[in-house]
Length: 221
Ligand code: 0O2
Image (spheres, rainbow, N blue to C red):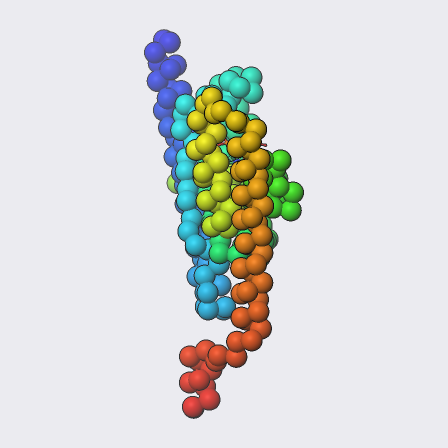
């Protein structure tokens, strides 16, 4: 009897993970569509790349244990907002907000929470825009609203976050405070570079009068 119960929980858990995987696909496609449209309109891609990940079972259990949440499928859906994760790496800071707004205003997307760690960086220097959204996914027999955590940041913010994430797992660092201070300084330098790159792009766009291929063709016709 107990084996049956465990087996049925395993089957249902696998099904839930499949649903999160599908939600990731939906959101990834939405970003790819926006990137394609943007490229046609503005002759450049706002998105550099998109990474997706499904939280592994161990990490889900760890998080639930840490937060004292009993392990049930209902509780995963209710309390663990980052089972499905989509990370979007943009070229410039303004692209982050344009892409986020374009996603949020889609009428099948429900915004649950928004954390702007760019306007308000974390004390260690971490910068990124975080959205928890819900998206309907259509399966053969049902429609299900699934939560997805979206992290949007620039290439520079992403490289800082990746290195800082790796360093955090290196235990017993001597001069921990000093290193944290250096990391924070690096985050500030990176943020300065991001705003300078945006300034340069804005200046180039303001001076650029290059006609598009279509404009050249139109003049000839
Ligand atoms: P992993 O391994 O990347 O999945 P939550 O604990 O998620 O319920 P919280 O902590 O308020 O709620 O969420 P928040 O602040 O939105 O952060 C969630 C995720 O953002 C983290 O997931 C990291 O991926 C990333 N993040 C947040 N702060 C930092 C930071 O200081 N440095 C780096 N490198 N990443 C950060 P996880 O589950 O912690 O980790």
